[in-house]
Length: 152
Image (cartoon, rainbow, N blue to C red):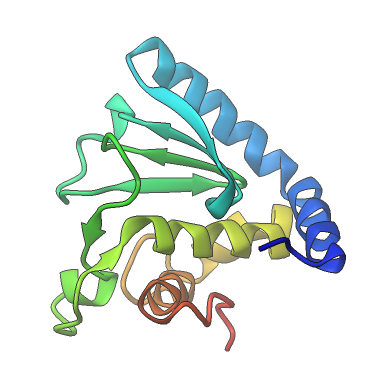
């Protein structure tokens, strides 16, 4: 199904707005490629995906990823893997596993809406933790397909 023109325009503007973050992601991804990572564009995620990122494999979770603008840096071979929500990993809930790709897509949308403001706001809200409203919103989006905005 073809997207409406207004949505394509909004996504293009969002990509331009978050381009400083995307550049950081591309630099990190290219550095990862020197150590064996591979790259591909995924239209569904509106992102350039760098898989098998070697320097993120120190994470203590089965699936890990980091989003920077329209770039997703992933430790695994693919992004479509199951993982637990932040709340579940922190012991707050017994939610069913979610798809990592859906969680990271929510962050891409957050970046496109907030642009260069995303990173400062993300860290002001607690950084990488189950209490961070950005992570809770990304988990909510991954569970339901709605609610990626952190102030819903």
